Length: 115
Image 1: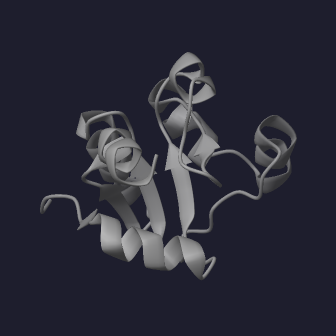
Image 2: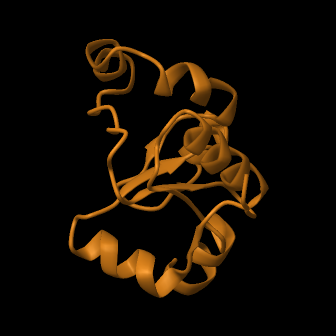
Image 3: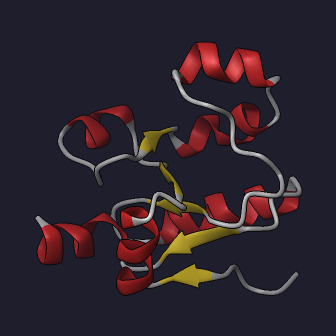
């Protein structure tokens, strides 16, 4: 399988401002509670495979959010520095999420530039 697609900060800003991104923070609950990108849904990477295979109603009940669809074009994962986000995007691609990408700059870059 080819490497995972990435997204850079300018494109992420544009997608977020237009409401066209589904953003998933795959850091731990503790990390996400300390600060995250506005609008991101926290699903720790350890739960991600199970979460992405749930029935939509179960996903909604557990995460209080709509489950991403396989055809979503901008399913963007991020972590603190990029490694877990890349793993998460690869996992999602393997499960059939064609638009899964990793925000390469991760939360560290977001905090520096946007925080």
